[in-house]
Length: 159
Image (cartoon, rainbow, N blue to C red; front, side):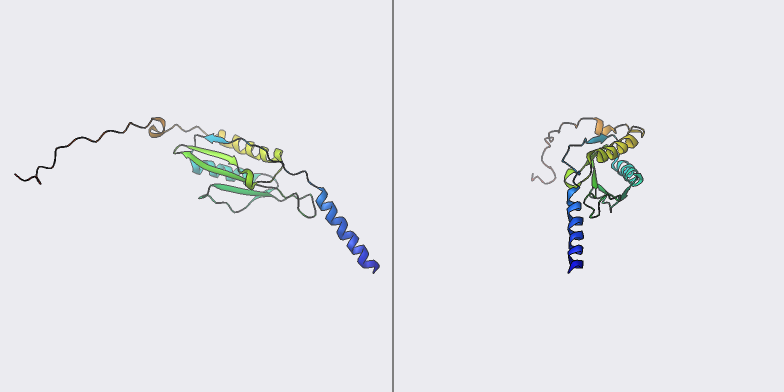
């Protein structure tokens, strides 16, 4: 009976100490960056930078859907309540520009950590040589031309 009380007391203390730790996350607004770079290059540099970030590992990424997920592998709590994860969204703005942002709904990390990761990615991509916009992207779309009034097909006309 005494052993059961001790075991229950230990379990109770473990559960209480797991709930006490709550310095994770309040919703914040992170910047969205737009680069004059192709999607593939921004995605690759984001992937490489996140992969090299100390204490974080990549989750399966989905280039077709435009996101990269990573999670923290350094836990400070027995019940892993402080597990941090982040999702970066990389999507095309137009043919020559790509945006990078943090998906707030799918991320849970300390503000300073997420911001530091985003700034590190930004510095890597910003250091790349700037691409010139193609002629198509730099010109405004041409106004639509009105259809030409053509005479009716004379071959089908009866004389």
